[in-house]
Each structure stands twice: as C-alpha cells, then as structure tokens.
Image (cartoon, rainbow, N blue to C red; front, side, top):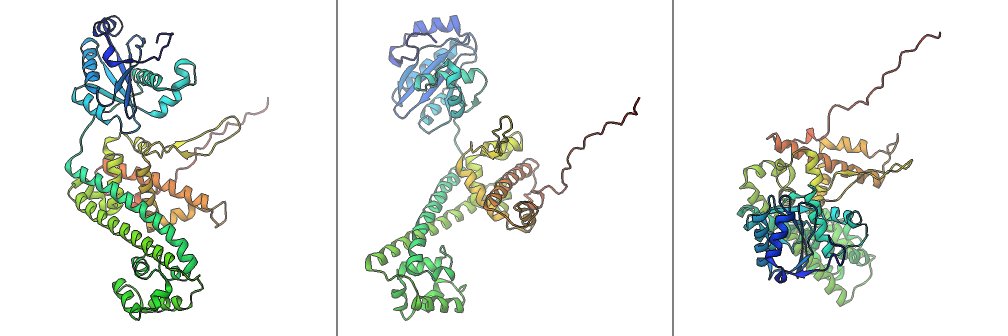
Amino acid sequence: MVSKRAYRRIGVNEIDRNQLVEAALAYGSTGTVMGLDIAKKEIVACVRWGQGRFERPWKIVNTGEIGLLIELCLLLKSKCDGFSVGLESTGTYGDAVRFALTGAALSVQRVSGKAVSDYMEIFDGVPSQHDGKDAAMVAELVAMGKGTLWPYSTLSENMQVIKHHVRRIDTFRNLQTQWLGRLEALVARHWPELTSQLKLNSVTLLTMLEAYGSPANAIADPDLSKKMTRWGKGYLAKEKTANIVASANSTMGLPMNESEVLWVKEIAGEALKAHREHDKCERVLRVQIARDPVMERYGDAIGPPTLAVIWTEIGDPILYSSSGAFIKAIGMNLKERSSGKRKGELAISKRGPALARRWIFFWAMRAVQRDELKGWYAKFIQVGNTSSSSEHRKMKGLIALMRKLSKSLWHARVNNKDFDYSRVIQSKPIHARRRRRKAATAPA
C-alpha cells in the first residue's frame, strides 16, 4: 500500500486498463486477490498483488457498476494465475455481486467479519476501520489462506419452499410470544384466576378472550359453558369449565372499561392468528420434509420445524468434516478466556446463525423430558453434593444438551443411521487419566 493517502478511492470508470495490465504483469503473476467491502449503495474494491503490494481502492456503485467490476476482474484473471475475490460474510447487500462473480466463473471466497475486525490494527498498526481499509484487509486475509470458497448457489425447489416457511414459522412464533406477553399482564390485572385453569397460549383461552374480552362479558353470556366445550373440542373437562365460570363470577381482578376490553380482544385475536399461522407452517414443513428421503428419516425424531431450520441455516450435516466443525458452524463451540491465575468459564462462541441456535434450544427443551435424557439432566443440574439446583445450572445443562444433540445428529447422518436418543449421552464414563507413581528408591 502506498503511504500517501493510501486509502483514497478512485472511481471504477477512471481506471486505466493499460496501467492495470502492466501492474499485473509486474507484480501479480500468482496469488492476486481482490477484496470487496460492500455497503447498500457502494462497493469498495482493493487489489492485492501476489507480491504483497496494493492498488488504491476502487469505488463501485452498487448495483449499477457491477458489470464494470466484472470486466476488470476477468481482465485480471486473464493476466494473473489463481486470481480470486474475497467478501465479508455479513449482510445481504453483496448477494448481487456474488451472483455476478459466480456467473463469470470467478473464484469467490468468504472471510469472517470478526476476523477482519480483529485484524485492523495488525494490518497497518492503526486501530481505525473504514471501507477502503476493510477491502484491503479482506484481500490480505484471503491471500493468507483465511478465506473459504463461497460461490453463489440456488436451492432446489423443495428447499426454497422449506426456507420460506422456516422464515414464516419463526416470525409467527416471535409474534405470538410478543402478544402473549402483553396479554399476560392484562389477564393478571383483570382476571388473575383464569391462568390457573388454562395455559395462556391455550386456544380455548385465546378464543374466549377474543370473543368476550372481560370476565363480566363472559358471565353475561348464558351459553358460555357450551361455547367453551365447543372451543375445547371435547378436551376441556366439565369441572374445569365450571371453575372458569366460577372464577369469572368471583374474580378479584380490577374492573375493565370499554377501551381495555377492546384491547384485550385485539391482543387475543392477534395471538390466535399467529398461533394458527404457526401451525399451518408446521404442516407445510412436514409435507415438504416427507418429500426429501434424507430429511424424512430424521423429521419425526427431531421435529419438522427444527430440522428444517438446521438444513436451511447450517446445511446438511454430512457436508461437515467432523461433529466439531458442525457445532462450530452453529456457534456452539466452546471458548475460554483465562489469564494467569484467572480461570475463565467456558461458554459457547455464538458465531453461527442465531435462528439455528434458538430452534435447537427448543429441541433440547423437548428432549430433556424424554426418559432417555431425564436422568442425565437431573444429575447434571445438581449443585455440589445436594439435590438442589440453580437456574444457571439448568441453563448450562440445556446448552450442554444442545451440543450433544447436534453431535448425535451429525453422527447419525454421516453413518446413515436413525437418530437414537439413547445414544446422545455416552453410556460408559470416561475415567480420568491415572498418573504413574515413581518407584520409591532405597536410601543410600
């Protein structure tokens, strides 16, 4: 990188192609890399020649001048052996240029945004970060072998449908959680006895609150018991129905005005709508997974939504070289921060997609209730030699189970076996390594 105004950008239209070819012949015989820093409206490119020299950064309009960038990349490819283009893995603004680069048969590599951030002071000794420097650092990291091949690829039609409904089911689940949070506060204020009879996410409870909005309106309807039986579809016991009617008559909650009743009705209606859309997405995912022979094998054991999230966000586990690589892609590999006498606690890195970790957490919460894992979890959450547990220990046990479930899925997929919950926990304990005792020597 030249020292004077090293990061001053020049427009891609101002580049002299003859000078670029001369520089390529002089410095870029092998290992030339172009790094890209991509924003919504502008792309900054920086060429690193094989000998470690840099050109000034180029500025390209995103997406209007991508064609000019591709022409220059093809020119460099014709003059340099092993030419490649590096991009950061963050955001979606780079999808258009990545698609164009792949279509032009250019080598595209991905560099972690965290790696670029950590490298900024090592690169030039200055802890500053801006687009021109970022592009140069991406090129440098790719040249150092820190990049991963990242060509643009389209999903199959079945996987496109699955990915669409993965987005929908996660969105509606979050919406339902938000609406139920608002509803819980209002029910606790105006009808606190109701949640002792029905769960807050019960379809019967939501339907009743959408219809009435308040306990006063509920008891004013003489057909309340019949409607609740119909809403419960035969699963609601008569005793529970009677208790709900009694609680509406004798509730200790605050009286409600018309605006509060209307707000409760709206909240219950939105929560019910999100619940129905969530169930509809789950049914579609079950049908789509049944069409894939590989995914169908694990759908019932893991759950269609969780399996669909793993396949769309992380990919087929068989594509990873080891179970460690698979959980690292999810962001559940362990990290430690220790120094001197300070021993830091192990924690997961959280470098992978948060969506996958969230649904694997739901999977762990379901799995821990199974007979094969219930005993292990009960022992894990014990604090010391007592039978008591803590919230921290419970969460730690669920995180440990998430790692074990993911590793078991990888092993089942690679070995072409069904997923078996009895094999998630190692049956034989690993004994600590015994140190050899030195033979006692007789005194002289």
